[in-house]
Image 1 (cartoon, rainbow, N blue to C red):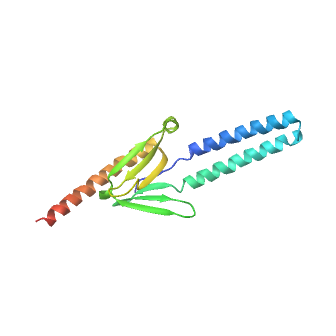
Image 2 (image 1 turned 90 degrees about the vertical axis):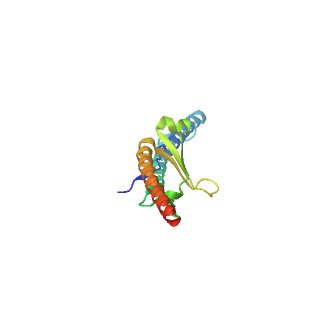
Image 3 (image 1 turned 120 degrees about the horizontal axis):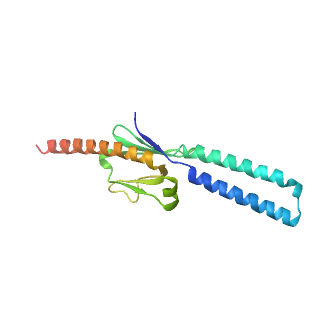
Length: 162
């Protein structure tokens, strides 16, 4: 079975709920202070909560369509819901695997993964907000497959010179 790492929507869901709570507080405060539509405050609050739930479910759905998979001879990146972009990189072409963890990501146990190839301008594959545990096991398996691919390439290249 090939290893898969997926983006985690927790940061966007936290952001959604912070905005929803701030809107709830602001709307309740403003309507109470102005004595306008006070009877509609519970209905508006329920609408905002429903809006937050819908956005959270949508974020979870969208983030499930951003992942990286280890194939037999390549790393395959999938991005998108409607316009799906598939990028594959043979193991022997991977130049660098970089991991970054900004402050909020570190607090939440997430990392951003960047895979570079030689000759490419910029990063070939990016996947943000991956759990550290998932990345750790993914990276171990990736390193093993990269070593196997490079050993195969070295053996194949030596054979050409004979």
